[in-house]
Image (cartoon, rainbow, N blue to C red; front, side, top):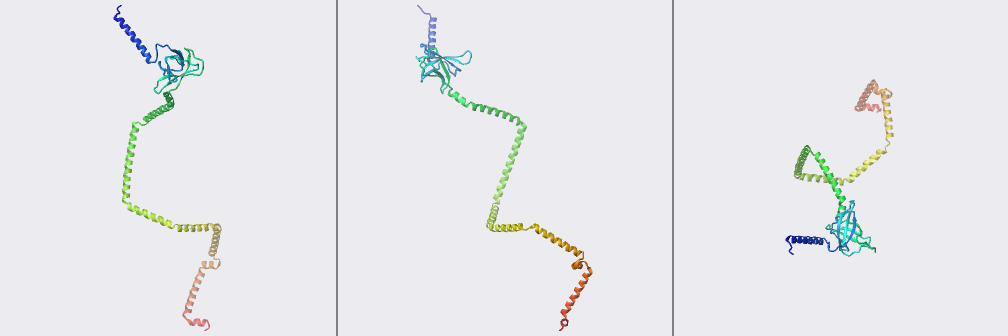
Length: 313
């Protein structure tokens, strides 16, 4: 029987497709010639799990993820695990979704110590373990939120500043900065002049400092004298404080009253002094008497005979 070319092409295509299918599943770790045992696991989410991801017990791959599909009520995902090895799973065993540092996912089986075995096609309890990336993301989430808030505040502040710093304000600010620059340049010029003056008058300044130092030394040496003067002043102050000023004031007041009384009597021509002061004729007579007495005394001194006769000699 002769086979047509079309049949040969068809057979070759079918064989190629079959080889491709077998090879693809083999690369995924699925043995198409071994049916294996299926178990069902319910997860709240897929956790990044894909079909073909390995199922591991104690570091040894015992199966693959056969199927991952969304539940009808969209409350989670249903995962079918296919165990290629003849593995007995005790009741209470957990299928935990894990991830490595490369982000690859796998199922880690934790077998319980229960003696009862889960039948083929039974259900396993599933959990999702937070991988390193998710842990780091969770740890940095508060920081990320703060950074986002800070960036939003900075954006708001920048917008406010843009609203404040209009063209006119920027021009005024530039003028102010120019004025400040000119002021600083003037200050630098003044500082240079002061430095030149100090350099020029350095000798005089040294002399002044020397004189001030000499005065300070003299004051230090005269400290004893100054202390003595202060002590004397304190003694005088204490003496003045001990004076009974009220009594002294009363005595002065009494003396003033007596002087006023005496002055009154003199003005009223009371007594000899009052008559002498107020009686003009008496004053003239007294003056004449004094003149006459002075003449007599002069004559008495000039003529010794009068003295002899006066004393009976």
